[in-house]
Length: 330
Ligand SMILES: Nc1ncnc2c1ncn2[C@@H]1O[C@H](COP(=O)(O)OP(=O)(O)O)[C@@H](O)[C@H]1O
Ligand SMILES: [Mg+2]
Image (cartoon, rainbow, N blue to C red):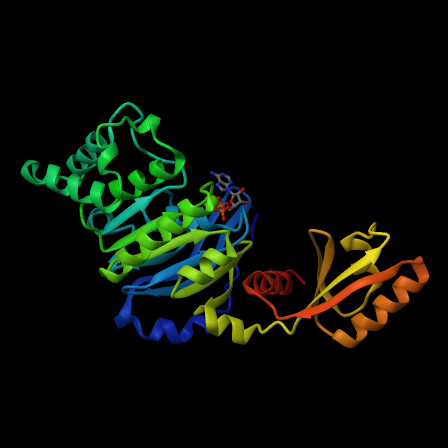
């Protein structure tokens, strides 16, 4: 049995108090699958009109959280409110207020883009005379107009994703849930989608977006919550997180011969948070640069390697993510 213990929610305390600007309020939300605790007493709020990035590695509990919020899976413990409505008790009302884009598309392969949107509009009980106009507007917005008569199954991955998002907007929801919307898209497809999401946000739609991509979360979101093993380990604006978890520096190093693995260095050198391979060199996320430098010199001497390149650089969002996730695991 999984033991139920309450997590410290003090870091979200400020947010919980200012409920007036919160469009989604999540309190102690928890999900157990048999003996696995997928989501563990998470509490935070999402502000009206923001893009909220829900960032975490695979298996962290992102999809499970979304599924609880949108009524697709039972909540084990805790509660959540969207626009003041309880996602369980007031499910029917909540459903009208939200758009949901699941990680796997729910469009009909043999229907055209236009038909799929009209069908979605029907499902949301949009009056018959408004369905076509809404579909047209969305096809144009997502650059799908010329594919209006193309069957879903013949679209590229990026276009499929766009249609799936379009379909979630037929009823003008206030909140849009997107589960890993850019996974599997190429750089251009990803950028094109980001632009659309920013426009939707500027039009007043609140966006809850899950991603395992650090750069996406940090570039696109107004605020980011980082989830790891079912728990929220950090929350704030990208710049607040950068400040709070300021990573000192990253040291890049190459050896000759080039046969040293990250774990060789990590095990030998003191004062490193993490060592990764990057192309032809290794990079060390530093905790204590002096200890690391001493260790590296000693390592090179002992193993008969020469250091062919050494360079310090500032930390980026990915280093920050590793640091936060790493610290939690430590
Ligand atoms: N239907 C399910 N039955 C049992 N375990 C599940 C189920 N769905 C997810 N899990 C487990 O819950 C955890 C969180 O999964 P998930 O929410 O899908 O993570 P993420 O979306 O962040 O990758 C994982 O350990 C996963 O294996
Ligand atoms: Mg997922």
